[in-house]
Image: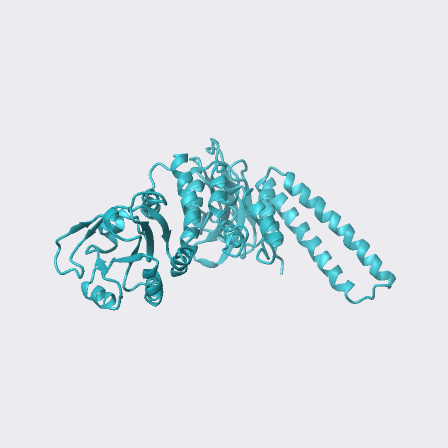
Length: 452
């Protein structure tokens, strides 16, 4: 199988006049069809144009407006679900795709006027060839004893090919083309990130790679998700770099030029912190976003997270607006967090139909006596719209302070505390000052243990 691919061209975000740029198609086996051109931007696929083909299968896509992003492009033909062809599209090139066969593949397709594709094809093929030769050499070496002369010849040949590969890598690293950037990502994925979990030494290499990524280029490479996802292993709880993800993301954000890439990287990074409950890292990212002041109109989840950032450690916790404990009427009273009359207070925001909440609640119930002995009072606030569901769940709680926000997750308490997912827990001191924000029972038990 030929694994040669043609990938995305350089992502240009500076002011470039694309009015003269044109993508020409000559697909003789697809007369009177429509070709669809789709570009990859991060994890999205955006249609950038549709090209009507004439009776000879010829057509052109003229870019009359400046493209905000350029990257990996894909050609398909309407009604031909089996046909999918990746190619490079650069704002500085006017390529022509030529194919006289029904199946448009790299093996039978030419792309004219495209140094990007020419360079990438050559580098990709050579890198593949050299690696295959090195791998074959290593397998042959296993068949010979150390004293056999042929083994020395194999070692000499291996060193020769390794020098050729290193020379190729040096050329790739020095290139200003996106083809060079792409090959750097591809080689990093195969060499630096493939087994990042194996040792701290490999994690250090991967961490250094992550902090030097050109995210503007990565955005159009089709490897946005896979590269970022591979680097996450560097920052897991078992790693010596645990707790540094937020700082590294902030450092990367400083160097991103394109606003859409900037926003999408924030979204990806915040999603990671949400998935793994890396609250400290999330605080570091949000703190940078606020100070950087480049994100003018945050919306949705990110807006809530930024608002919740105001409730970081050391800040005064908002007062709670409480209905009758079991939601019998809508009368509310104010429960001042500065007057909770306990050494510590654990605020638990949950939902009765939440699996993770059930795990946290069961943990609190099992360890309730230990928690109480440390002077911690539990106050639970349900985001249940159904009072019956709340009553059924809360009946088993050993603590007395169990309430329901009658408007559910959109209720005033959930909004005031910036709760976007459950369970969310805050620990307050006797003055209502936030000491910690948590999402798991293990974090609570660690706090309890420290107070022992």
